[in-house]
Length: 93
Image 1 (cartoon, one colour):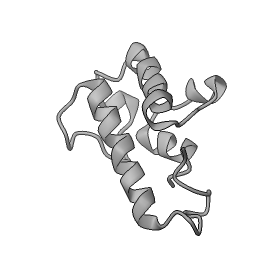
Image 2: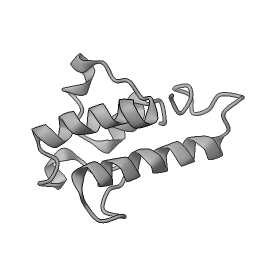
Image 3: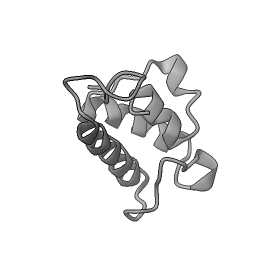
């Protein structure tokens, strides 16, 4: 499951759906990192949160695929350092 095309939306997936997926991804990041709701934004980077260590990163990538159907290839997943990059990989931005 992806948010849409790189251009922002597909005809069968309106902007509202994309915003809901962004919210789900951010909520999942907060859950996996065990931080309070509202802590994570599109701009959050790994270095911003001590909870986002290498183990949490692996768990996050796994949960994205298992719970939201967002599959990120391993070679790309290891390069991710921010929520914005996760959203880009999921084609939400």
